Length: 245
Image (tube, rainbow, N blue to C red; front, side, top):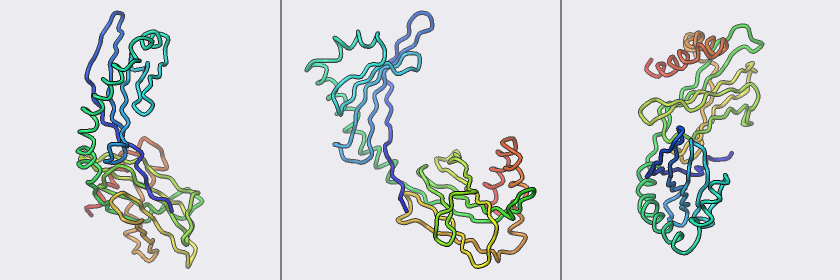
């Protein structure tokens, strides 16, 4: 089973803005892109935007400028070259990225919150399947997470749906994965969760002997999913509150 990989985090610094005639607006952005504490892993980007469109950018990896409009091409023919230009960009990278990235990485990425997992069954109506299993992960951080279903140890890809990572409003997230299934005696159905807070994937086996009242708690919420997005928000709220039951 593959584990999660964090590709990059962006540290965005907006340092200047320009306004012009006819409603035109432009700004520059400095980005420090990284995936570890190693200064050699940092990529510094200086980007120019006009009316929210990227016009051109400088990349510290190649130490070159890339332009996307004729106007930027004319501008960079004189401004985006020479020892002085490169020296300024290197100094900016040192000032804004090299000194800040280790601190940001330490503060954000080294702090994780393990998800609270709830596995339950839902009785469905008007469906060819007999039931639906819901595997919910609550209150985890950071955002990337992987929730998959296993049937007798083999990953299940059909009849599986999942929400996006939902924001709780306190820097933590929740997600809900659903498996429609027809129970077969003797088989083992498992929800597998992978997250940065876990040293290895955690497995949660479904116990079909769970009492009936527990299985039926989510009947109304499940119908909300089947009926469409109009009831989705209330269904999600119901899932979130169920942790306190």
